Length: 153
Image 1 (cartoon, rainbow, N blue to C red):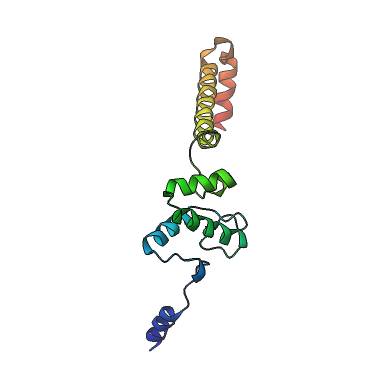
Image 2: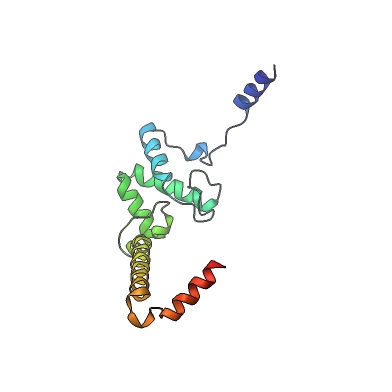
């Protein structure tokens, strides 16, 4: 009985509603599907880490309408995205492109990791060379005897 109630509750629980309003939807299902696909990759500039389809912000609505307007005008998906990026910069993309000035950001992590590994290797190698290979740093017979005495206790 409890399992049945739990299953019915899960099935009847309201699903999260998308912010796309019926008056925004295109009558052509193929164009609407393309609009939804494009919208999934565009960031709401008000909500930030939410795509424009999920956002209720006025600016997100304006972007949804702009995407549909450009599709109706005959633009390809890439042309629509390029138009919006040209107007709002690459910040509007949820997955920024790895080109131009953002290429520095994409490369910074691996470059810093590589630099850290190189510096660590140089440091470890220099310490190992200094320890035990320099005759001036070797222990005298008296120091070795004292060390053995300390270690026995």
